[in-house]
Image 1 (cartoon, rainbow, N blue to C red):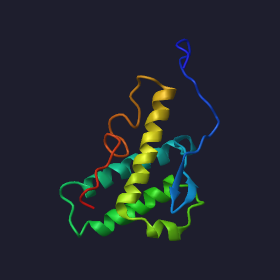
Image 2 (image 1 turned 90 degrees about the vertical axis):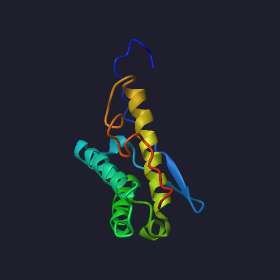
Image 3 (image 1 turned 60 degrees about the horizontal axis):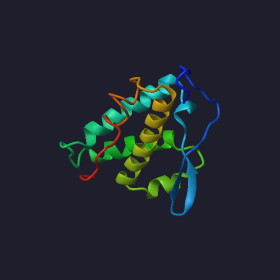
Length: 135
């Protein structure tokens, strides 16, 4: 980015892809979401972090699985069939969330270097990565 440019925006939507069982599926870009949807994703990420943290119980697993499904459906474009979503494990769904968060953070830093944005402090995953050893 040129140092003389304060803000460098693009309307092009480069879509990252995730391969699942050899088939490519496109993720949404952060720019695809309205502010309210973006904030919803961040809030759900915090909730997932709480549910999947050290206090994870078998009683929380159904809530966690349902929430992960909702977030992954939002992140992935509608071209990923429900049957594929049902085959994914919770850790795989978290990997999709982490991939989206990484893309969002990179794009945010590219657009506004050195600024604190949605994914800087309270992000989808509080720091960008959910740990899922317990799931």
